Image (cartoon, rainbow, N blue to C red):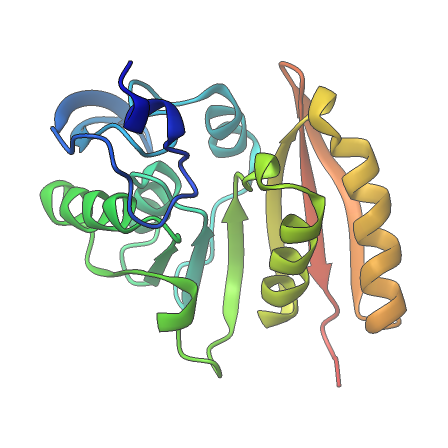
Length: 214
């Protein structure tokens, strides 16, 4: 592994490692599709286990509206949202430009319709989401993770639910407790947080916004 490879993280904005693309056949939304990945993005060699748990356990996404994949990587969650809800608008958000390029190209190649791959700053500030699906970047550290979640979860529409998959030994239960308290402190009565599913050492947490909020 080169020095640049060793220093790359999937949450690096501009990975230094070589951007040589790799073909990957993967099952998404009940079908096998061919995508491309590259070094310097999250889990480039396969569909990681946490994402697989998320995609297997969550209910069907809303058929229309704005659907958000927060921390999209090369795009498995965003692509699934687009394949399962072809009339919706999918937003694939990441800080990693290489990941965004891959996600956009993969969306075109598998036939996803309205698909936006962009950095957090490029998402219109007034946009609200019918659902959020995320395998959040736990390894960025608690402070960054908490700030990210408190920024994006309040952008759920009334009645919308965010589904977050977190490895049990990386703090899923403590994150659930923190979310419950942190959201309640800032937006009393606006959100409910629950453990939606448990599988293969992962928790899927569901954060739902009340049907009527201020």
